[in-house]
Length: 56
Image 1 (spheres, rainbow, N blue to C red):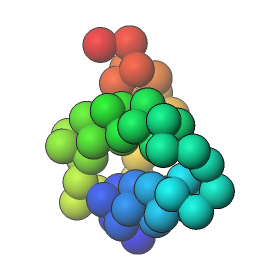
Image 2: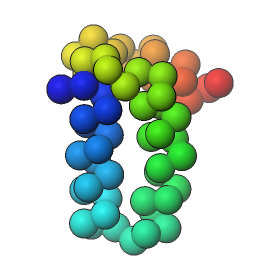
Image 3: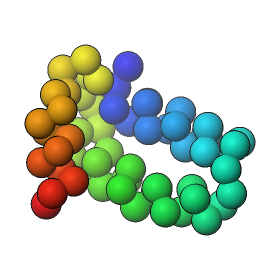
Image 4: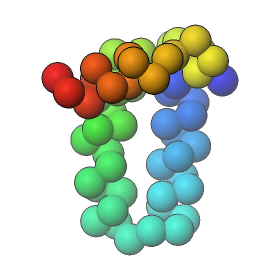
């Protein structure tokens, strides 16, 4: 599964289980991460890369 596919599924989950405001709050971060690594497979992304994304 690619990062873009996983983010799309997570957005569907948010829409079904949370308020719109929560979805909007997550959307900025999720879309930013998707722009950087949309076609990468989830199993090759390491935690240090995610940590670096959050701190930039």
